[in-house]
Length: 189
Image (cartoon, rainbow, N blue to C red):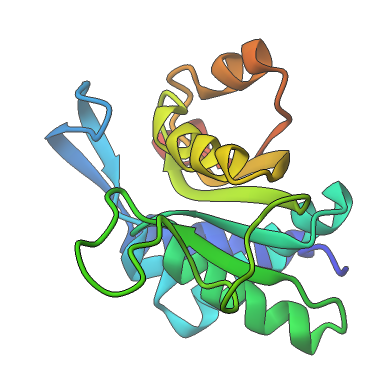
């Protein structure tokens, strides 16, 4: 896979800073309060942002050797879609999936979605992706659902690590953890 050039990485940082980074009091999904936030959807759904994020994440997925990539709804869905398309165009297709926070009470009633009928993650090498990581707990919920399905967790990768404990959390679990950006890169601007 082709890694982002320094200029492309800088451009992606500019997109994230302009579209997704903000300052102001917020309560994060972890329950912690913060004076800054990342709302990654505007960057993940921006044409250039989606393409650059997909390339950056696919590089990490490729290094891990995983064949499947996904994560917890909603943050992982745009990343996964862009990544699957890019992986196909790059000649190294990976299958996407996503994990529901709660099983639907209708339809197929599956927790892991996106796989062909009758297929599970059993025996598959997977990467869990996340848009923003704080403590690591959200991505871990998705990972646990996949592990319960029989998957082999190879890596957790995030677009932005807030640097609030996720790296240490995954180290304790013995799970490789990769970041595309760290919060300090945006706080320093």
